[in-house]
Length: 133
Ligand SMILES: [Zn+2]
Image (cartoon, rainbow, N blue to C red):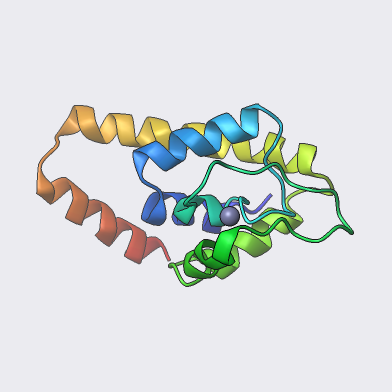
């Protein structure tokens, strides 16, 4: 299953805080495709995360609805949104696929902190991302 772009999107655009919020949202069973709080929109969410609606209903919108548009302009956003749609046929399946990816990203950050918290490390990582793209 392709989750490379989701992985890159998380690494490039999620703060530690947002990543924790994404994990909680997925674990609680509220994360889904049909919401401004999908895997892409949460990166820039300005409000409490919303439960996804079922397919066929309108996407949940939020005041101004601008944060999802902002999120879509971030690196890897279009690719990640597309992957999130296609990794499973249901939101339950999407959460199942996504959970290990979120946990991997958290572990990777934890290891980065252990190895060294210097600025060099950040640059190194960005080069790594660029090289793997
Ligand atoms: Zn929203």
